[in-house]
Amino acid sequence: MTHGHAHGVGTTDPVIVLNGVHVALSDARISVLDRGFLFGDAVFEVLRVYGRAPFALDEHLARLGRSLEGFRIEPSFPMAELRREVHEAIQLLAHDDAYVRVMVSRGEGALHLDPRRARGPTTRVVIAAPLLALPADLYDGVSIATVRAERSTDHTRAAGAKTAAYVANLLALQVAQERGAYEAAFTASDGSISEGHSSNLFVVRGGEVLTPPLSSGILGGITRALVIEAARDEGVTLRERLLFVSDFERADEAFLTSSLREVVPITAIDGVRIGDGQPGPVTRRLHARYAQRVRAR
Ligand code: PDD
Image 1 (spheres, rainbow, N blue to C red):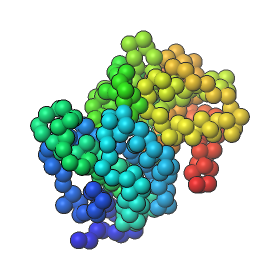
Image 2 (cartoon, rainbow, N blue to C red; image 1 turned 180 degrees about the horizontal axis):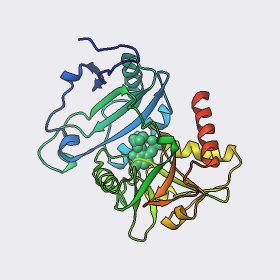
Image 3 (cartoon, rainbow, N blue to C red; image 1 turned 60 degrees about the vertical axis):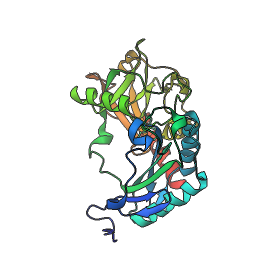
Image 4 (spheres, rainbow, N blue to C red; image 1 turned 120 degrees about the vertical axis):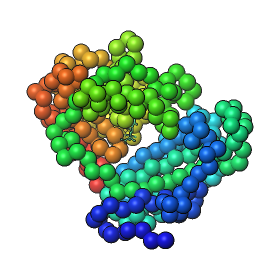
């Protein structure tokens, strides 16, 4: 089988490595009895590829291991094998800037929720695809909407795991979109804001950066961790605490972070403009410092 490996032009089929084997997209099938399909009993990672190099692969695989642990899913393969498969998928895709998704489910089993009924090996899928075009004006700033919602892993021993069952995130995104916003901000019953539906959140006020702590049940974003280091490198004070809408409304700047989008300025929350409604200087400095770290790797 051939892939349209036209370098960098046109659309290219995603490259699939299924349980260690490169298969054509049309042959990339899993059982309807796979627990990832039946119950969302699976975890995943998404990482960005710059110039055919997977960025922060070690951090992503380490987090995948923690997510598996949170679900008590025993991988039936060595994690180092995933590293090889990610590199193989990237090489086969032959696109400089790409997106890689790694998914691991508990595997196939009986039509029963009981995880002990899972039999046989875990299912693993590595997908490499050209990076989806980001909105051209993304870095001019986006709006977020507070959505009252919990993550499916909140207050569980899998808190912070990147579960494939992204139903809470999907529903929150739908509500945010209906309000004309770009990203949903998970908001708890006490009004505290923890993270975006697919990002971590930061505000800047009086030169100080604030971002919610991991204890709030958020995903320990890899971009978030590197931006925290970037703030230290830049000599910018950063404190971790829960955020409220008032923190955003009083902020000089705000931004979100994620592997695929790096650092995106936030210029409005629930229709209220943040700062002067323009990307702020600290946001730009931290993004530049982050980009430097990407190049340095
Ligand atoms: N989002 N929080 C949530 C709920 C996420 O889904 C993501 C990633 C993040 C950012 O984590 P990191 O910096 O490790 O990518 C935080 C998707 C996969 C993305 O847009 O990358």
